[in-house]
Image 1: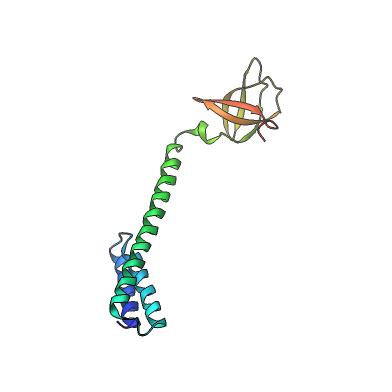
Image 2: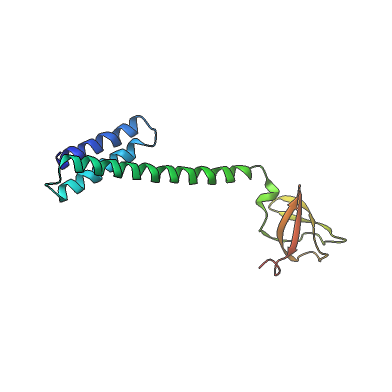
Length: 147
């Protein structure tokens, strides 16, 4: 088959992906274009070899697409679990005490929100690190200790 026919097939499949989005036609189109390129380099390759190469290239392209989609889906799920966990989003953030921590209890402003905190007794103005949280109470540790 002519390299131009492989290229045209690839272009049609990629255009079809734009009209009928489904994630896979673009990969088949890319495999067809790659087959056209390889066919242009090896003129006397034969239709059976071209079809075999296309099958392998399409399979590899779809496998790459599936791995990529699974990774994207997993990272989206992990982000979605924290979307409403405001305290969890603050873990690892450096804060400065607004009020002293006395008997393990204190408060800190993060943005425009006053948070209840637990941690070692420290005076107001001390740099601390949010180590974890218990519900809506932030658990702090010394900033130097967190590094």
